[in-house]
Length: 262
Image (tube, rainbow, N blue to C red; front, side, top):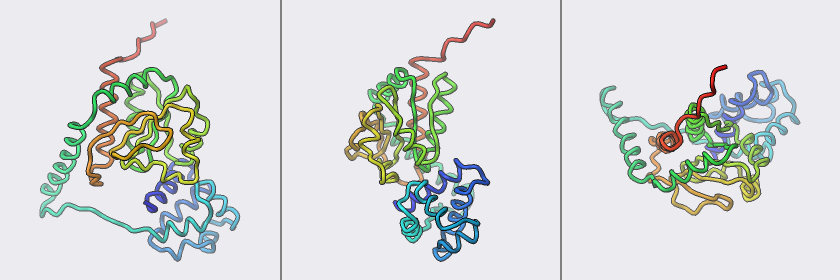
């Protein structure tokens, strides 16, 4: 989990900042040196990024960390992992990968509750301001859902950065609908310096997850699917759920009426 949090804040910063910005330079330097904990020191970052001690401290706070020491703790816990199929041929490896994903999608298709999907579609129709948020791989599903709902005339808001997601939640009110995509149901573990109950108190919140654990306080409805949390399935299972919701929304409400040509 700590490595996941580190990826979320660093990749979110790199994706959301200008390439020449100070925060982007620092985040990229850290990403480039994750395998070398000695290189991630105040001195090395100052020299490589041409910044001062105070700028690095402000960077840590802006990306949602307490301070530079928490950044060092997260870097020290990095444990790189890789998964590969063992078949002897490329065709065999791609077939094994396909079969694994198919099993994951079959699990979702057989477990997705129709009543909850329809209730979520009704809420998507009812609320004019809707945000969909995920972190890391889950945000890929959020972006796909945003794109496909836009094609149906329904605009959803999303951002990659966890800090920007938290900022949006800070301003959300009872007129807002929020969809949180979290494969393991631990979305707020990545934002552990925020008051989750305060963030979720005002908007209507749906959690889309494979977790069977009780939802955090402030979540109004949960759309669950069955999974054994094999990382090969992620984010394909969430993508399947989100696109299934989109297809049901299209079936129920169709395309918006076309404006008459002038």
